[in-house]
Amino acid sequence: MKKITYLLLILTLFAFTLNSCKKSGSNPQTAAESISLKFNGTLVSSSMPIATYYKSQNSLQIIGAFGNTSAISLIIANGVQVGTYDLSNGDALLTYSTGANLQDTYIGTAGNIVISTFTSTTITGNFQFTGTDLSNVTGAITEGKFTAKLITQ
Image (cartoon, rainbow, N blue to C red; front, top):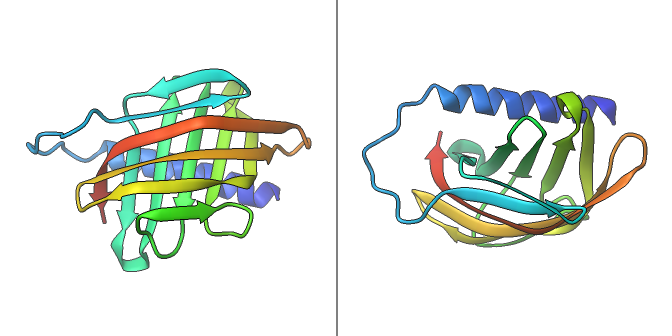
């Protein structure tokens, strides 16, 4: 389980690094980009989500950092389209890291990701989950939502 957690953290950091090097285009945005959620009742939000669609694998990763205190990663590994993806049966993976150095990572065991809009330029949706960290502490995300410019690779 630790290997999966570390792999997810490495993938998230890699995606941040890879996407931070891209120059922004001149395309106007139709909606403000954001990702927000309540973790155990505490609201966090960011205006800088990164949504990367990997066309050859038809997979998607959405990541968001909330200052230096927490980060989220939503992954749909196969067959991205408008619809609902259930975490409990492996349709999607959701992790939430918090604490000093993001050492407490909660891996979603129940919940879902709902894709409402999926175009060549934009993705919107919502999510919720219940998960546990490596110490078997349970955490819950409610009222999760995102609107992001889609980067296709």
